[in-house]
Image (cartoon, rainbow, N blue to C red):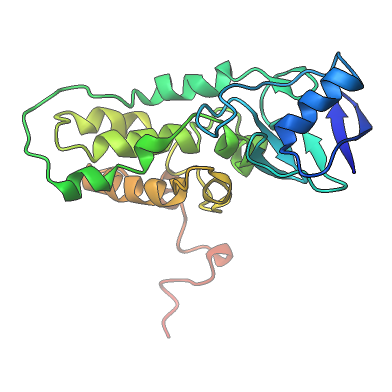
Length: 235
């Protein structure tokens, strides 16, 4: 069985044993074929998110993906490349700081089971950066806050114990909820089944409640021919 690996600007092919996970195949290559092959790994149990890469154009966890003949393995997108499949994730994690998605003003609240389930799935995020790599917005806007930062924002703005949700909502107006295209690529690649697209949609609703709106919609000129109709033209 043969797989190909993107290494800087070249693609190299390697023979690997059948039935392996991608992470096991990478270790096999490193031990028997090329000791210089560089990649990231951690728990080997789909818990830490360290080993995320792209296979055939889709983000996966190396420890969970079963190797198929002809697989093309690449590093995550929109991350500074360190070497081979290893990327620097620090810049992506800074988006969490920009949203300030944490408990700002704690207040007493009675939480029901329904309240817990409201954000139970979002709490499962393992910061693998798969959604960040899959997001097409980064191709045109490197300052976009991104799916996992906005999911974290939703998690705290939906928490009854948060007494200052407005601060978080304010922080996600620029390069945030309105910049998302709602394409759903982030949802498709999340290994934990989180739905950032829906979280962002919910955050838009909360933003409207706090008096915010889509800035691009606010600047539309409804009377121009480009928009499709003239409100003064009659019917």
